[in-house]
Amino acid sequence: MANLASAEIKARLERSYDAIATTYSTWAVNHPCSLRFSYLDRLLSLLQTENPTDDSEAPTKSALELGCGNGYPILQRLFSAGLFSCIVANDLSSVQLNSAKSALEAKHDNVQADWRQGDMTCLSFNPCSFDIIIGLYTLIHLPRSEQLLMLEKISLWLKPGGLALVNFSKEDTEAEVIEEWLGREEGWMFWSGYGADNMPRLIQQVDGLEMVVGELRPEDEGSANVEFYWVILRKIPTH
Image (tube, rainbow, N blue to C red; front, side):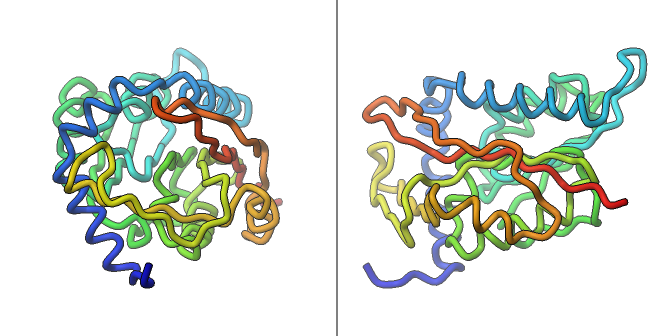
């Protein structure tokens, strides 16, 4: 396969996720969520340990989801957690992001929601803006060199002691393409990654981050068991 430019990859992915939005929504709702929820629960438990809050206090924490899709299941859980006063939701697909906004914003008017459509690598936030950042099955859509760029941005955007939950491909692959994902002619997909064996070393090179959890876990995608490398990262506090 000829090398694809980053801009072309993202443009094609945006068109794909726009076109297959309904099919993807059906697939997502029927896709097992237990593994994602188990890691999200670990993340939120660690967050409460790092920065405990009194139940009587109004929520003050902030969260960012990179690649929120239609909001199910992670964004939905964040809005309902009772921990966050501000949630920023990002997705490459305007159709997916608008679906999430329609489903969640009106139901959770106690949370300040910020909806950011576009390439995650082009997002801009002040340093130390977020208590948690989540990117599940989303950084893998970037060319792998840009995945390292995103880790640097995550380090910059997290507050000291803040946490990130992300996952990466098991395999070391520069480019994997599926022409018709979910059986849809419009469902062109791209994945990339350095592989689970290389990620601990690469994460160590990102200034300000330490790895709290790093483990391979299988997830049933219906047709085959696939594994991803699940990582929880912590922003090292400065003294």
